[in-house]
Length: 268
Ligand code: APR
Image (tube, rainbow, N blue to C red):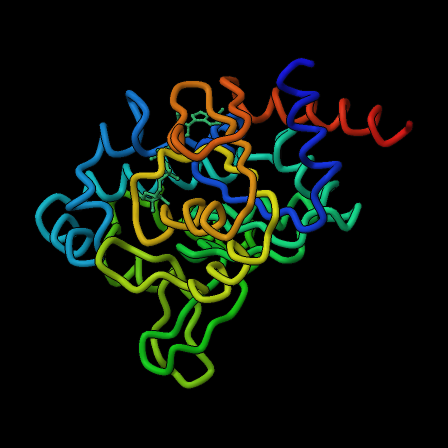
């Protein structure tokens, strides 16, 4: 039995599947990961670009670098489309096999693929959060990215004020920011994620280095509660000690093969 069939058998036998995903699942959608060679934290210092204070300081000292970083991000997110791994997780939820996707990603691609129960522990770029009253509001992805591009391409008038104006005002009149979790900020939906990790009898761990806690503890929680683990990652078995099936491939290629094997298995 090949690894795809082994993984498919575990999914077939499972009743409550949860997925835990990281930047790697969106790599084949064109969104760079953080810690791969040449990844985001290779190009940009996480101290500066991964914290709210750092971004403000880069804005003051090197506004052109921040403008480039933001424009680069807008390009990436405008081009990003769901891939075979996102589609597979949506199919599994549609089959009532999978009840939750816990994701560290902010790119909304799981929702774009059709997953409904998505627990975003690091927030979502296409949702605003009011800095005064904390009210959250979904943003229209295209409108938000096009508005950001207009501001960022206007090099001569680039300013902090104009960056702030990319975000809509809150109904309370307050300023808003993207509802993403920067380093040092509280993660979101952690309790629900722990509950999902404890409830599942199989966890699909797709595209994560398992480097950032508390999210990285979730597969361990699942294992501790008796779940089996399937990890798909082309370069590292981040959860080697607790993985039941490890597929050393890009998830966008491997997950469709696992789904093919599952369909064959369920046909019998
Ligand atoms: N398919 C599956 N996995 C992949 C692919 C792919 N096509 N390409 C790369 N990977 C793997 C890499 O081998 C690596 O193990 O995805 C993982 C990405 O790891 P990171 O870049 O560390 O991303 P992630 O695990 O999501 O980081 C967690 O760190 O910086 C913070 O908030 C950020 O949510 C992020 C968190």
